[in-house]
Amino acid sequence: MCGIISVLSLKTKIANCLFSSLERLEYRGYDSAGIAYIGIDAKLHRVRSIGTIDNLKRAARELSIEGYIGVGHTRWATHGKVTEVNAHPHICKGVAIVHNGIVENYQELKKELLKSGYTFESETDTEVIAKLVASYIDNGIDFQSAFKHAISEISGTFAIVAIYEGAPHLLLGVKKGSPMAIGFSKDNQNFYIASDAVALSTLVENVTYLEEGDFVIAEKRDTLTYKVLDNLWSETSRKSVPNRVSLHDVEKNGYETFMLKEIFEEPKVIRLTFDKFEYNLNTSKHKSISIIACGTSYYAGLLAKYWVEEALKIRVDVEIASEFRYRDPLLSADTACIFISQSGETIDTLSALRLVKSRGYKVIALVNVESSSIAREADFVIKTEAGIEIGVASTKAFVAQILSMLMLCTDRNSLAITEIETSVRTVLNMEKKFIDAARKIMSSNSLFYIGRGPSYPVALEGALKMKELSYIPAEGYPAGEIKHGPIAIVDEDVYTVVIAPLDKYFEKTISNAQEILARNGKILLLTTEGAKNLSYDFRENENVDCIFLPQLSNPVHQPFCLVTAIHLLAYHTSKLMGYDVDKPRNLAKSVTVE
Ligand code: M6R
Image (cartoon, rainbow, N blue to C red; front, side):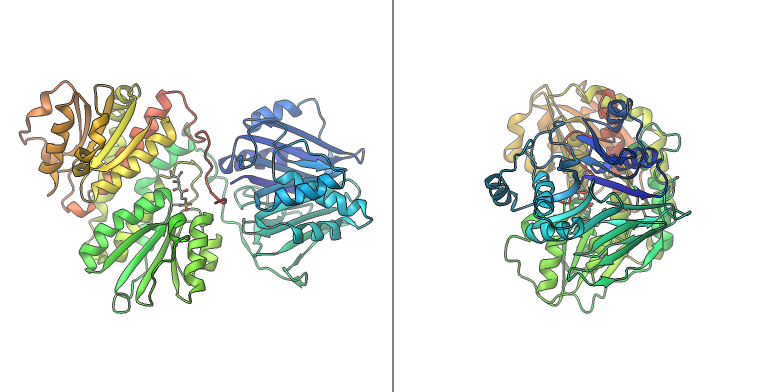
């Protein structure tokens, strides 16, 4: 949520690295963006614009951005509308601040600063940090100490980078709750502080992830040096690791969008997950499982519940992290708590994990980013093999999550992995059918996704993908539940995506589809080859379209190709409607605010 890049350099050519990193960081927020740098004229300069980095580059085209130090930011608005004035960096008396996270006590701090004569131009919490640092400098304190004092006064979760016109040789950063990565360029001519390793993918070979409460102080003299101070302000060392993010990971590689690239990687992710999976659940120790997650990761948990309960015969509760952490959950030592998160940075999930740990229980994390906060704080980590996911809508990561959960409860020899992989490839080859279906769906007022059994979480995932990408209201329901209220909405402008593979739920789901048709609703039936020759009379109904997906020999494996199908459907609906699929409005990839 919000992206940060900053550089301290022995050379003056910092523009390229700021802009190219901001482009890579757009997935973390793309409401507005900005840069600030201390030019060779020794003055602080700033450019900001709303919208994409292309807009920012246009706004900056008149400037020759030359200097030894600069910061850049892509914003996902929390406090204050999407305006240029609210865009970062925020500056005050030569101090420039970029910030990811939330300053929870900014109202009180702002009141004090207003009393002392400071004025504010934005509605953001971030501007308070710039003023606070400047206020200490005004009182004769050096930049480094002023930054330290200011940070000690703010509460919340954040990653902050600061520069100051009066100390152009210093680049300062602090991490509390939001991730921060640092590193040197290969030639040691540049030092970077960023919000993640993706920003640094082409810039550094080795990356260091800061720990909670760490400050980083980078200094330019004849050479560049840096030190990390812990939250007690004592110098400490943090391990540097090879930056595994490659250019290939962060480029579209011929695909029009990251999301399409990532959907087409789903078969590869299935194979890799299967090949690399080496984890076991200690079922003699655990009498029940609690899965805690948000969004798509939560739906992966819901799907896993069907599999795990059937295979292991132990109870599985699936919880939304933001609800879990604010009630008083009943926990016990024989419950395995599994936290699922693609990014590993989702603050709701991380806070829920901390709650469980604070009660003295061990936690398991199923994450896609090994260096993430959730991975670092968990007692046991199951790494999903999706590779870097850039599209804001999670696709291949969901596939890796569900396969990992299936493998946790299944003997690997019983998995028909080649059949699963091939069936997903077959669905990808049917892309044209989803484009045709999307063309019909795109004009509907609202959508239902319905399914029974494991197809119900798939329906939820389908509805989430559709609404986040096409902005059409879409709700997922258990097919049997629709008649208990939601059917009141159904009319000729409502489409229902019926997820009904030929399995033990098929006939019941088809009956629910009939109830929708009887009310003039339109239906897209996602079913499987096995249902082709069955007679269910509505196939000829003009309000029904059918897509037949591969029939897998084991019904337990069927969700994989259904998932790819609903991903393609959401993708093409959004594309046809002319939206930016990689950057749907109001969203960000990693949600590090509550
Ligand atoms: O990184 P996480 O898996 O913890 O993220 C959880 C949700 O924010 C995420 O799945 C979100 O719902 C996606 N935009 C769905 O496509």
